Length: 286
Image 1 (cartoon, one colour):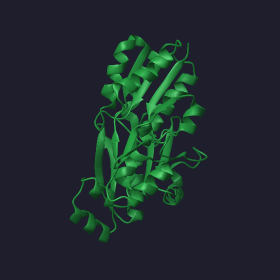
Image 2 (cartoon, rainbow, N blue to C red; image 1 turned 90 degrees about the horizontal axis):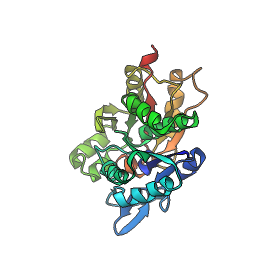
Image 3 (tube, rainbow, N blue to C red; image 1 turned 135 degrees about the vertical axis):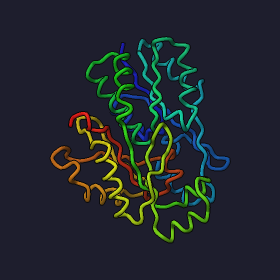
Image 4 (cartoon, one colour; image 1 turned 180 degrees about the vertical axis):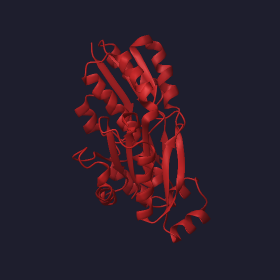
């Protein structure tokens, strides 16, 4: 009997990385008009952004159903495995409730975690579980450990444009127009399971400073735990510049920072050019 870790594509864990980690990533559905795709499977990340920038409307994503979760759970339970399922935040999706409904059939063979995160902060939580599994911990202990550590998982992002927030109805057209004129870049995090705007930075340098200040205020990065950076769109040039400018945060502690190409869940509202950093706070080691 082994432990099977399952998550969804809102984690921005690619199918290639999932195979390397020996986990399962269930794709969310992404709909452009009448066309429906499987996130990261029938709709690769680059193709998603190509469609996004060409479309006048933002795409829609749909939650994973109890039936879909149940099919995956049964596959592994029937072969004798224990399952731990990590869902994107219940604050933005009903997928967690779907997973709980499906898990009820399998008793203590399936554990379901509401990560209260998504995007690359969900990514690092799943990676933490993978490390614990590979250390030989039993499923229940992994589940309990992760629940205790969830409050220490953080993400901060800076968007390059307000346009897609406007298209998604998150801000007014007037605010988006004015923000564009002033080069205002929203800086966001995930708090209590939902997106929270920390502030608006004028220009990239001010945005980078806000990212760095947030990391320092939360206790810095625990480099013994997973950490990750991410970018939206076609190029990580902006992210690489930020990582170079903020090298003092990790010099002597990490050779490099893993990079993920952020997909549909955040990319829909961020548009191309956004950058993000996810980490577990290091305050406990001070």
